[in-house]
Image (cartoon, rainbow, N blue to C red; front, side, top):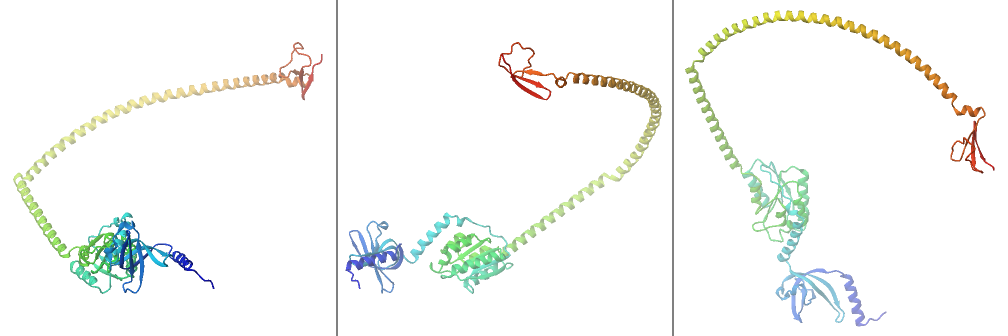
Length: 440
C-alpha cells in the first residue's frame, strides 16, 4: 500500500476537486463568520438549517468591491469557482458574483429575461382586440376565485358571449408547461375570438410562472389576441408585456374584453329615437312640399293649358302634313327626270365599253402573234450561239491532239522567246498535265 505525504494527498485532492468542478457554479446559502483582511473578504456560506458550511473568499477588486458585510445573516446566491487550498488542505469558493436571494434575486433574473426578449422584439407583436367577441377563452386555475370573478363579470356585462374554460396550473414548477399546453390548445381549437389569461394575487414567487420565458414567447406568438389579468396592482409580469392588453386584475381583464351591454342598449335606443325623429321630419317636409305643389297647380289650372296646346298641335300637324305631301310630289317629278338622264348616260357608257373591249381583244391577238415570232427567232439565235461556243471550247482542240504549254505561274506560253534554260514547264493534254524541263 502506498503511503502519501500530506502535500501529496492535498495536491491530489485539489486536482480531483478542480476536475469535478471545472466551471463556475451557483450556490445558495446564508452568510456568516464575516471578516476582512488586506481588502479581501472572507466568510462562510451555510445552509438555512445551519448544519453545513463552506468557506468563501472574495478577493480584493472583484465584483465591484461589494461590501459583503451588508448581506450578513441574509440568504444569497453566489456564482463561484471551486478551489482547494493545498497548503491548509482547505476547500473554498472563490466568489465571482453575489446577489440577494428571494425577491431581489428573482427581480434581477426577470429583468435579464425582459431585456433579452425586448431586444428580440418579442413584446412588439401586438394584435387588435375584437370589439364584439362571440366566444371568450379563459385560461386560469379550475374552480379559482379568479375564474368565478371573470365569469360573473362577463355574464353581467356582456351575456351574449360564450365562455370557454381552459383549466391550468397557475403556480409552481409545473405551471409554465401547463399554461403553454393549454394556450397551444386554444389556438389549435380556433374557437375563441379572444383569450383571457388570469389568476389572483400572490407573492412574487407565486407569480413566477408568468415570468417564464417559454410561456412569454408563446403568448407573443398566439394567433388569437390575449388579455392578461394577473395578480393585483402593482403586480406586473413578463406575460403582461407580451399580451395585447395588460389589466390590473382578472375582473379588469373581463371588463376590458367585452363592451357594456347596457351601454349598447342605450346606444341602440338613442339611434332608434334619432332615426324615428329624422323619418318624421322627412315625412313632414314631403307633406308640406306636396301641399305647396297642389296650390300651384290649382292656381295655374294646367288642364286649360293642356287643352290649348292640344288644339295648337292638331292645327300644326295638318299644316306639316300638307307641306310633306307637296314636297313628295315635287320630289317624284325630279326623280323621274333624273332616272331618265342616268339611263341615257348608262347606254352611252355600255356602247363605249363594248368598243373598248373589242379593241383590247384585237390588240391582244396581234401582240401575242408578234411575241411568238420573236420567241421563235430568239430560240434559233440561242441554238446557233451555243454551237459556236462549243466549237470554241479548248477541250475539243486538246482531244484532237493539240496541247497547251504553261509556266509555273500557269501563264500560257505563246512563243519560245523569253523562256530561260532549265525552266519548268507544264503541258496540258486532253487527259492530264505533263511536267517537263527545258534543256539548253
